[in-house]
Image 1 (spheres, rainbow, N blue to C red):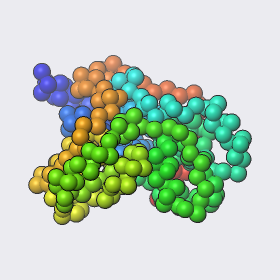
Image 2 (image 1 turned 180 degrees about the horizontal axis):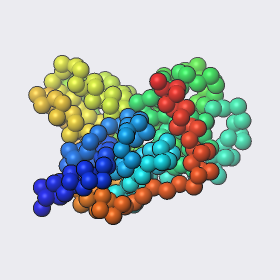
Image 3 (image 1 turned 45 degrees about the vertical axis):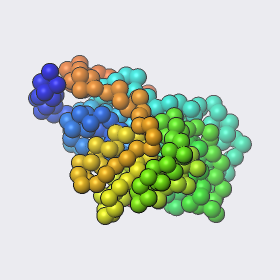
Length: 303
Ligand code: CIZ
Ligand code: SF4
């Protein structure tokens, strides 16, 4: 059955001249059928620049919407309608509008994990792999950062001369890490390198030998010669890590970290999406234009 679906997907993809993009947090079998696997920054670039006019975006809604914002002429399909990001849902337009009134001189910086409506209210977007470079290029000394309090806290430590005011959102997957489980593994394997995503809480980040985005974590483990790594981010990333580093050992902190929303997309969903054009991302044009500015600035300030 499984092999059949893969064959059908590949056949339909050719017929329809489609490209399949997958985030590092997707299921291994989805990463395997994808044409490109990456983080949200890289995937947003590929979606914008690829020649294909039909994009199957295996990820969560804000990623597919970001692709649509940048490439309105392309058809963007999200195979699972309710693959969302709970963190993105933690920032609401009304609250942000009020926040902006309270801090009229601040630059409003949105993690790309936010809705299109919220992006439309912000000055610039960042991803975890591009945030430092972009914030370095922002003139303003006062920054309203949303929705992730942990990534914002991490960035505020990197830029002590800037004043960060943080929205109180968080990722439910990264919040679950128990720092004690990291300490316990370090006791068992003293030479292990701890690689942590900045969506983790401060106490967890402070135990990291390296803190960075998914692509940063993959690069760190691939470019260094250490043997053992503790990977403190969503487990989907292990697929790429093991493929690139078959001779290294990867561990997880206590319980496996799984994002339920990222795991919703199955091969059958991708197949259905190619057959039925489901689910097409459609955005109101005024809203899209209002959100476009912050994503274009992300690409400008990070290149
Ligand atoms: O930016 C992304 O793709 C996410 C959600 C995580 C990361 O660090 O790459
Ligand atoms: Fe959202 Fe966290 Fe899932 Fe990423 S891992 S999509 S931030 S809930």
